[in-house]
Amino acid sequence: MERRSVNAANAPQPFGYAQVCEVSDVKRWAFVSGQIPQSADGAVPDTFEAQCRQVWVNVETQLKAVDMGLRNIVKVTTFLSDRKYNLENRAVRKDVLGSHAPALTVIVAEIFDSKWLLEIEVVAAA
Image (cartoon, rainbow, N blue to C red; front, side, top):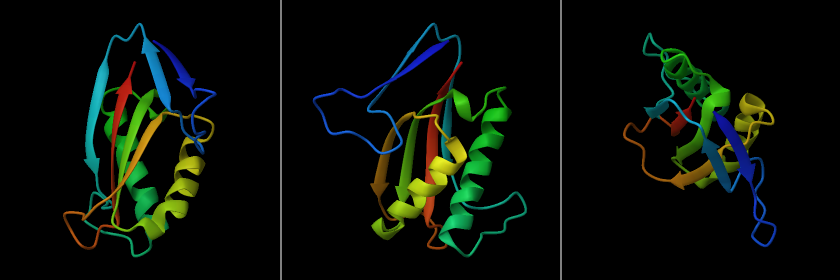
């Protein structure tokens, strides 16, 4: 698989993600359902940062189940319970993904369980 992140020069520039993530020669796709900030034993962290990190652990765990990893992600959709978490979400995502810049959408929405402050779904390709 070949992957290329693109940001058109004459459009708004993003912060840590790509406006377009082009993939070619893909053999496999993985569509990961929204991952919640809950550990396998049912614990939900108290802080946004801890919840965000737990969600990314869950995303990575699901990808490993299909022999993929974070570098295979081509699209991330993040659902935040409140826009006040935007900058903290961005910081954790940058810490987790490093220079990897998939396409990204962030939506502020009511989350299924009021204890959850976010949910993240991804699309990956290999």
